Image (tube, rainbow, N blue to C red):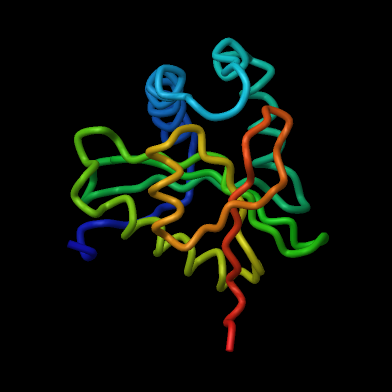
Length: 168
């Protein structure tokens, strides 16, 4: 199974357009499933402001946002977005992670996540942080070693954290 799956960093405008198409479907699905934190601002995620912010983060010199496409052979089946703050404390913030519904429940999500985690660790991140949006997401991330913190984001969602430093 793992030989059929790969992470591929976003390379060109065509892939960027494919990403935004997948992202819109993801946001539609997420807006219905949100059960943790404050109200979900669907309009913001479709706005030019949000897309401009993502593009500015993606193209900045320091701590650029990275978008990876998840591919099964030549088919894009998901994506992930993250920023690692190397100039701060080595935190990698996993902003979005999605496997398309038709590919869920087959182990692809965990497999790709662990490939991404290894890549992020090799880049030099010390830990990964994220905010689950519903109970199902919370169970997925907890099963991958993330621990709930007492810190909350601006939408009152708890941060979950996973250390990438070997513990003895």
